Length: 540
Image (tube, rainbow, N blue to C red; front, top):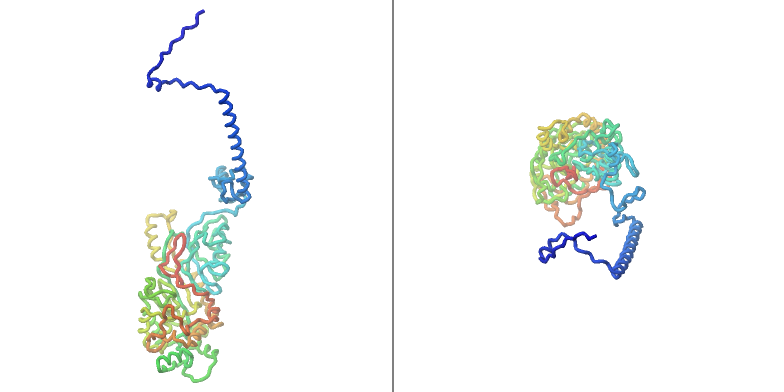
């Protein structure tokens, strides 16, 4: 039988034909020499792999001993070995993703090891508050010191408005304030900004819950959702002081003698001191409280206050501000002085001030001194205070200063435009910041916890009397501008870097009586502004 015929494959001679040929190239058959080479190569690869695995295990063991993950990062390994997860990386999904996949949409963090309790959404809010500052070292939070913000923050943690995750640091919720008040200063209305939890199941009224955890001398009035930034250019203050502070220095005291030595002649004694008899300080205090201001002196006080209205360079009323500093140019919008009123044995005067800056106690010192009957040219003195010459102005006691409330007119006007096309149910809708809706509660609080407390402290401790006695006992040059000519002498002008031979100082007793903290400087540089990270602070 003949073999089947085979087709002859024509030989390709062209290089192009060989290049385009679809037939796979033939493989060379391995020889014994090639097999030996493969064995040697495989042995080397196995040895290198074993060494690499050994090094990797050593690195992992070292990282574990250093409490680091396999990649060398100091990440928590809590529960990862137990769960069998990749120890070198964290899951992209949230810790509650499995629960959510199964349809469990409860509060985040409500289960699992290490949970700190339910987590609820936070909202940027303005919390309206009021407080009596007696017994607190000012408004601003300070660790290990009793402050208004410290007491308030603790109450918000207890009520759930601040979660336990953020309970160790107020900065975690961006806590900040509208007006930083000194130790002993009161506020019928102030404002703190923070990211707070506003809704918790089982708590129908968050404000009531916060107040339950606050002492009676600190109150929360309400809260409003706010935009990320807002500002208050002006604030409203009231200052209360006994009318006897307008009595001129007692003849024979150090201040009286220093002014007499400078002027070369003694002024006519005030009728209060006309009686030539020896009296004790206790007798003087009792007589002062029975003294009543005349209509003429009230008119002089109001006229003196008017000289401070308007825009002036108030560098002498600040701490550390230079005459050339732009922030020294401030505006005093309005000063109103009510008729005097008698409570107990003492006659009191209240001064209402609308202002865009702090350091009111220095300005109050100035026009209180201006009302002394010995000072005939107070207008001349007032104009000199706005000049480049720097003098020392003592601060009136903090006991009498009350922040009525910051004014948010510009912010409220802006959000009215934003709300024009929104419904109250819209998430972007914002209510105005309005203290007036809480006015009745604020007035009751002022009477019970501020006015009554203020008068009781003065009757018991004589804070204002001690302050004026310290002024009268000073015989140096710093207060020579209280002369009857209304001239600021060169001896009273302060110079930077120059050490005074006899500088005026408050006594330690005064600071203790007033709950005064060390002066932290003038921090009301710019117009008040609140944003997500901080508030520009304006001191009262």
